[in-house]
Image (cartoon, rainbow, N blue to C red; front, side, top):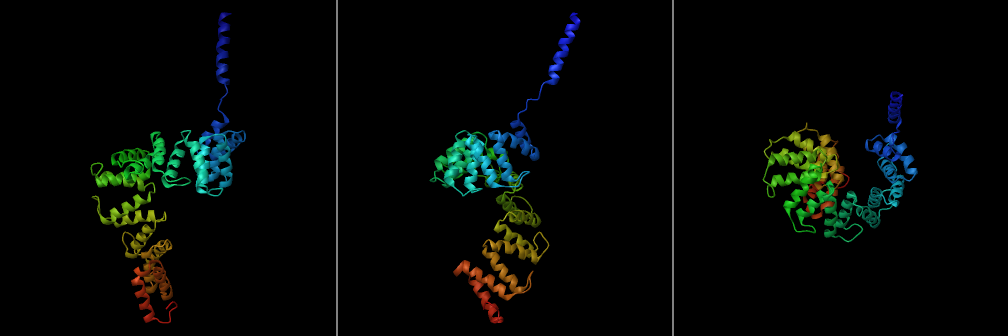
Length: 366
């Protein structure tokens, strides 16, 4: 009888263990799906939780509509979900609502309201809001410029491990904004951010190791940091590497192909100086096969952004039929554009127009 009772007790224990429900909340399911980029599942679970008033789910839905994750990208709907979360005092939602006001996404841009919502989130210790609030004080958006307050908020974010706050704090120390200049502390905070993958700080560390004023000069380490930043599409680092390879600096051999490759990466992000450099590479055949048509394409991109050298080069290419059918009227048009932009500094363009008109007086524009 005792043996039978003991057996019943044992079976009941196993029965309880096997039948214990998995008490994962809808909110947790939403967060798990969102964090792991299972956006189709996240849309279902987050929507259900959000409709019941879950602020974190509302915030996640806002991000999904903002980025277009498994839904049609829609700033207005994103805004509505961020506002629902923010109105409940949810810091992430408040910060996101501030961001929408700062960028004018889904509503008219309003820096003062952005500042209002950033403050609410920042006072709860939310680091992204603290960094954004610091930025607004640094640049005077929605409030008078105040470097001391900017420094304060950057520091709050930085000490909590926020890479952007660390990077911005390093910048403030490097240039003495709101605090006495201190390159050692700048190096310290840049390193903190760089170790977390902050591309801006990685580029800054490259500069510091290259210069050797704050830390012992080390070209190999400088190159390493430049590469880390450049591989994250930091335009400044990409341009730096392009220049280093083109000129054979920091102990590397001159390599026009590497140079052209890095200039191309920066140019594709819209940097006009890099667009000019890519055009030059195709024009001269430096590191790439000479191709006047490609050169013309990149000169046009740079010229559209107002780069005077590109405008001048287009005038020359049209007047000489390089990569395009010779067209003196278009050449004159580009030269006149340069004159309009540079005024008295465009003597060469004036001469070029005179030469064309002397030789081809019936050309349109003469």
